[in-house]
Image (cartoon, rainbow, N blue to C red; front, side, top):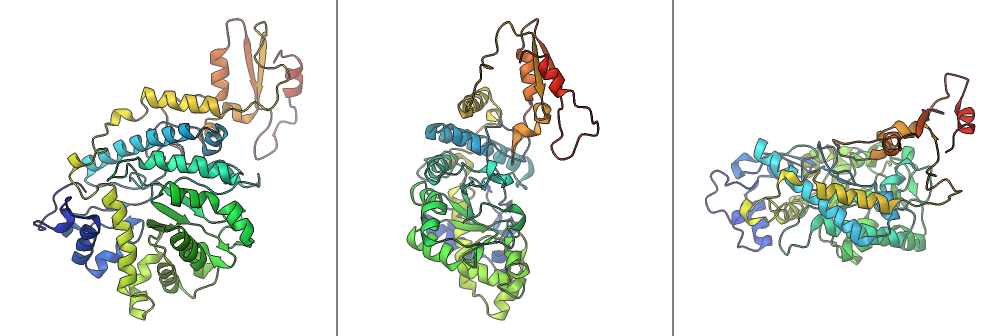
Length: 446
């Protein structure tokens, strides 16, 4: 908000000199029940009388500020992991956070509030374990190894959140908790049956690393069940492990519309009212989706108490206070981040460095480096001419996209001929039964 609200006088929640807990409690004490409930969904409503603008909690920054216009595009998560460079991962995340801050404050100055994908709560990184190549979203992860995933993920969180003693640069989120590694098609109904040993040796170490050591601000519950318990309402995952054993103090958010699965697919509740009540009681503070709109009815049925609502609201408000949303801009060191950092030369150089370090040459039969006397280079395959393949899931927009084919052609010296053939399609057979790729390859030097 970063503005003096109307009719609040010297409200304690606006006094930066007071302890954080006192400020949060003061604000909660001023809110009506309806206002409290309006803050528990990802599209948190404005409260004009308290000077609180609307806020959309859903923003993405997997490998750059995503779905919010121009941004520096860094290597996809699986590529960043291939660098094995923890310090580099933190530098990349810090640059992403700088761009996110700049874009957030620009939108706030321009519109008085921020919209979808314009916030400071980034639902990243994805620290699920990728062990089945059929899982199409494996690219979003740091790979198959729990240790490497934890190291890179923790560094990414530190980069996103910064090291200021009072303020978060942005708020990171460890997802999808837990045992969420495909199959994608069945994620809304799937029950991941896993032994205690495999759970704690394979699927939880990275989450623990991010929570205990990197102090990640948020954790996102997964769609699936784990050992019979829906992840977003699991007494084991959320209660015993996350908040009990690990001492997590941040907020928990559901994956988007996951709470509907409690009654529609997992069949552990009868309706949306019961689903909302169960998730809230079990420790899910924020609903991505509309399910928490039924909490008012849950309260009337006696399924939840206002104290349950206050507990979740308190955790959410703590995050917003730590982001500086209730303090004067001049007090928040990141509020003055200029838009000139977005796509700046320094960040583009960092993206280039990360891309180079992410490349792994598994086999070379004398093709590289390309011989200086090569006269014909044949490039084959649909991905060569695709910009999409370079972007990966959750991407921003670059003003200088260059496909692999364009890059090769652009670096070819005078006298070298670069040819291109589609070769095949990705999802359907070629309409033309004649494929010239083999013939052309036999006549090319490379």
